[in-house]
Image 1 (cartoon, rainbow, N blue to C red):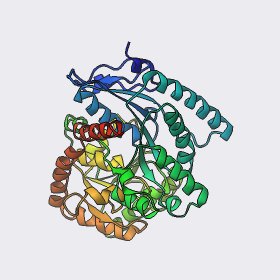
Image 2: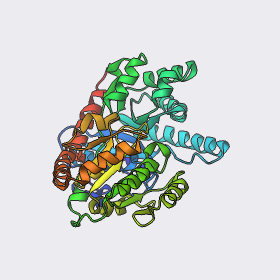
Image 3: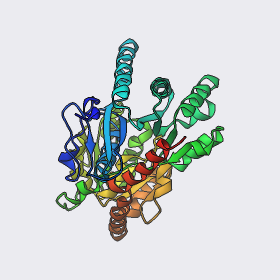
Image 4: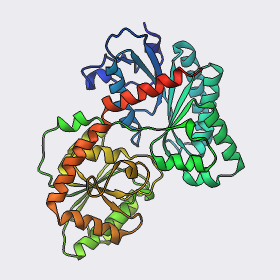
Length: 399
């Protein structure tokens, strides 16, 4: 039995989702591509559990499928990270201690060429990641640390303790991956060497959208995200109310859940939008595809400090027009009016103007969707996996 088959707490059944990948084994997320003459390269990936909120699992699953199809890449995964922030501190500490012990044992058994950690730059992430990095250092394993978002305020003004801990984490990492040039500029401005970082992509499974049956795009606007204030849901509800006042009726489907759900429902009631706004609650990722395909315009007026929301990539793959804010990776990869219409955060009236620009020009909306469907191909699992393979091998080849 391959050592990776005994290493993982997370199951990614790549074979069921990609015919070119080898079948995963129960209790393991081992996946391996076809035969090749070069030696097998092993990657051990820290990954959130399937079904947790956020786009990490969706992005990394697509990339893992691509890696498995390349050949001579073995990917094992282990449970890493949790959104159970409401759990008592002692409970989280015990769980973390157990995770660290299992991680140390896994690394010693598997001896991967590269360890890939999916994290975010924030206070909790720093405290957790430094422990994993110290174990990897003691095991003489090299770590690629990928940040799915970063707290710019903490980086710039976090104080001596957090700045010092950040320096330790960056020093222990062989490479730090960021999703946008904005985040790279933030780290360089804070005094970190640019050469320590790589701007990397998230991957999207474009085939899942292309193979889905077509729809007639009757749902209008779509908002899909975790319901937290920085995602801009309440601003969007205000913008929909303004559009109705202007005599432009529009429907909105809101997919997700979170701390702002009660406020969003109350705002909908107060604005008299009950007949045009629908809340689906949290849906499994596979069930969201029909909403991406049924709506015409994806709206995400976010000012959350994430890298590149998977919602945008999914909307592009589904051939949707996009209205979003010009921040982070969206500013790197999207252009107006080819791929999106920009909106200003926290400004419902300006958001309504951006939406009206698309709603009043159906041909622009259709053309934007067609271009986005093509652009999404640059983020396919196969394309992104090839880029990551080169990065992994460069990390492993360092003296």
